[in-house]
Every structure is written in structure tokens, then in C-alpha cells.
Image (cartoon, one colour):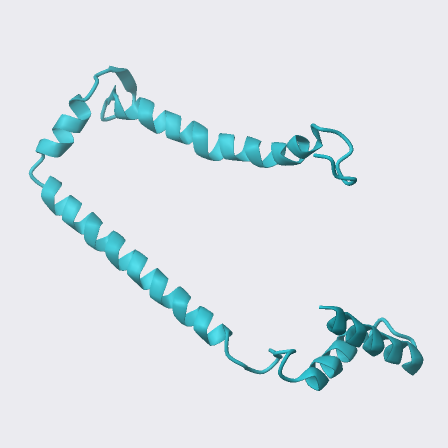
Length: 144
């Protein structure tokens, strides 16, 4: 915490506070409520009764459709994870190849300079400023 950017020891915690609050509200509290409901008696009208312990779990496991439900869940999770992984991998591999508007700077520096100049053109007023921008880009590339 001896950084010049951190003025006080507690400052990083202030920056983390919003995400901690949101995680608590939208993740931790719902998990607690689900655990409370799992061990409670609930009427058909949705009214929460008293504590019943593991009776709800015993009833769910002893139901005749429990095996089918578990098999469907395992199949669905397997297919979903497998499909998501394959699709993400395909997108990553396609995105790693050269295509229009993607320039591998190490392969073609002139194209990168032109593209850099075009995107900076709106901010520059004349050609001298544009030349300075390209020279700045080149010097930046040399230092990397």
C-alpha cells in the first residue's frame, strides 16, 4: 500500500465497497433464503411453515421421477458445458486469425500506421499534426 496513487490505507476498500454490496444483495442473501426454504415446510399456497429438517430432501430423493430428473440434469449440464466450450473455442480461434480490420502490428507495420492515422485524423487539424501522430506511434512501437 505504499503506492503514490493510494492516499489512504482504506481507499482500496472504498473502491471495492459497491461490488461487495451488490454481491451481498444479489448472491449471498438469495443463497441464504434458498437454504432456509430448503429446510422449511412450504404449503401449496407458498406459505412458509416451520423447520422440517431433511424431510424435504428425503421426499425428493424417494420420488419415482428422481432418477429421470437427475439423468436429464446430468445430460443437460454435460451438453451445455461441452457446447459452450466448443463454441467459445471456435470463436477464439477464428478471432485469432487475420481478417478485415484486424491488423497484426508485428507483421505489417505500415497498415497499422495507416489505420492509426485514420482513426486519429478526426482529432488532428492539419497534416503536420498527423505526421507527428504517426511519428509518435512509431516511437511508441520501438519502445515496446
